[in-house]
Image 1: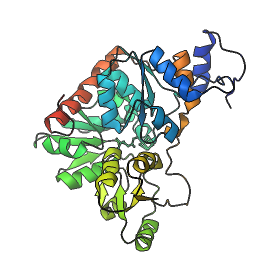
Image 2: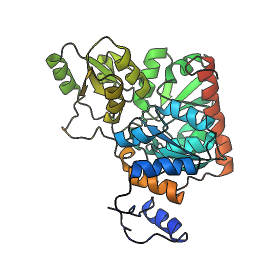
Image 3: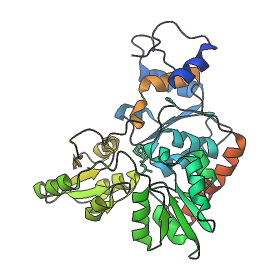
Image 4: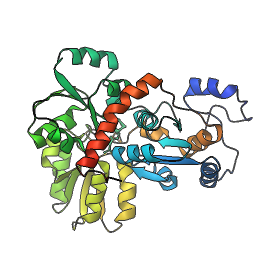
Length: 345
Ligand code: 13P
Ligand code: SF4
């Protein structure tokens, strides 16, 4: 139930409400067919709906494209739509705006942040960086535009290993903000990096002991994990990869059972693409549902409908920030093409 459930807002009210609530808090009229209305508005306004795999199943089903951070940034960069509605979190919408700044980028709920991105505040990072003046900065895409602007190259979980491997060997590297991904990249590439000490609140709650016990219960199951998980869990994993890589692994593997250590939103596409496979969620430390990303789950069909209808909240970034943050993201896309991580077209 939204705080404002009655009359239609006047155009003057929308910005006030958005700045108060972070979204347009208007209840859609009763019996609105949200699926049909979202499709209609997308068509009418030449809008594209991009969704991350951690979105609820209904949002994934109505999206024009569902993917991991790398795929989503490629789609955002390439689209000819006038409006990009980003069903993900704030840094993803920022990346879309940076890569395609003439488009109107809408984010259904401005409050959809990211604990990992928040763990790296720009001022603290600037001071950290100053301690290593001769170092280059490799930043994970899960960062604010301000951190991207201070970086030499951006990576995602899909391309971090090959990109770091391909950087000039004489470069000294800082890696921010995910220390678990950083440690994983160091292990895979053999390169030393200075790590920022950030973590994702979702990927660090899996219980290694319970996962080990589960593996005894399901001896044939493969343990698959996102590289934001802790090193002890990653050491035991049969496969480590981005959300897209985990999905493809389940689809292509001859195995039938998988213990999945990442946010459970990805299970929707796994079930759709590989209905014969058994998917077991990796257990968490406190038997909580804290492996569900609270930021991703702020998006709802109602908020997406409102975002399209009222064209708000709109993500706006200063032009100089867009310019500064674009270079390292474009470098990532260029290197990903050159390394064959994404197609050259
Ligand atoms: P990928 O989908 O790029 O693997 O990222 C996972 C994630 O944590 C997004 O916030
Ligand atoms: Fe951020 Fe973790 Fe949520 Fe991804 S899953 S958006 S890294 S808090």
